Length: 153
Length: 153
Image: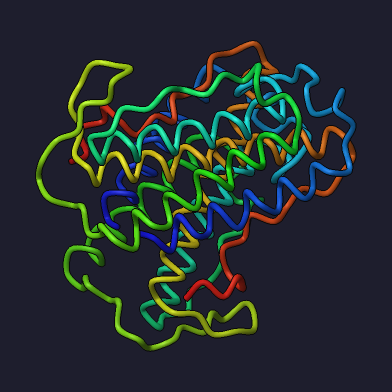
């Protein structure tokens, strides 16, 4: 499963790079569907992944506020900071797939750890699909979502 | 990994159901990004999944032509027909994750079986993300992509 996280991280970094051609107005422009702007989508992906994987570890953390991350650089820095921590977690504590359930601090319900990790993976890929439509609406070629040829295996 | 296929199949079936509220003109209307129409996207997802999983099995099959499947009912029937076969394959021949590489008949390159299955999973989720934007452009609520609460675990 870590390979799929690595896929997501590689694609996400390519989107951060892709975004550097856009103005801050384009990054924050209101769009149709999903999380309604490109930058907010990237922030949301970063935030959701980290929160859920903290929940898997039984840690409660303070949610970052989008109002503190309204530039590409700040959101990318947050992604990098969290990534370092997640890499360590995956390397040191994997596998975490025991049958204990996870209760996140922000909602009701209990979920298997595997279920949570799958949720996080799927969540990012789904939102990246939305970015690809918005890219075409800007007459720009989106980042490729192709998993093949990324030398992950 | 089969759980993620089941997630994709559940979401896909919900999209087929969702599509039944649209006219054939709306299903085939040219849209921005991805595979350019809702029906063509669903057909493409179905076709790509089946072709790759046949390739994993070393089987070569004839590609269906979209021109033969230009109604929702026909594309859904194709999805169901393939699904039956894929379910059987997953149940009877799983795990297939040996280290042998797969060469598909329609392109160059060799890929690990796990890589191919991950590719197929990610491919569908990505295109479903695109459908969700097009749904909002039609002022309709998209099918939820949320993996949690689907009782897959």
